[in-house]
Length: 244
Image 1 (tube, rainbow, N blue to C red):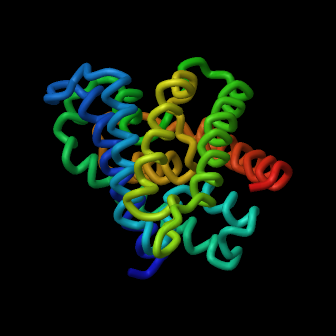
Image 2 (cartoon, rainbow, N blue to C red):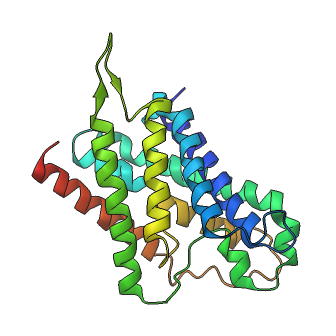
């Protein structure tokens, strides 16, 4: 499979399942309504597991522009491929959230609160303070990227070297990593920790024919893009400083 196509497919899977669980938990009339934080964070972690299993052998399973940027910074990924990966991830995030809406569109129509409708697509801070939100996203992404850099650098010795950061083996620690970030650090902003995860679905919220959807909150949209990039830069910088 072409690596860029793999990133598109993998990100589509992650965002379909991730926004899907949010829709199932928060929208009225669904089977999972009221499932709560544990259901959401667990499903997001397993969504990442699915994405990594499918795409890892072909693209390294970045599935996140912040991860792609950090890997390029530390010399684990070619800079000339960064743009293609980022566009593929953004496109996959748009398609995944669009498919989730297609499934839950009647439940979206039942919701009266425009914020609830937007909530299945993109993140929203629990307290609207831009500085705190940027710091929160940066810290969450720092943890994600810093740990991933060490996962991708490890290997198992045997007849051949098997990179832990690739394939189904690498999907397990990454899934646990996303899970703990959601549980521990997701309470302030909803832990986008991925610019494509928030921006792609937000674009879809803007363009889809959703009844009574209200604003797409573009005034906040820069936070889950800038925060993760800052966190990724910090993680890559520290990794280069302390060594692999």
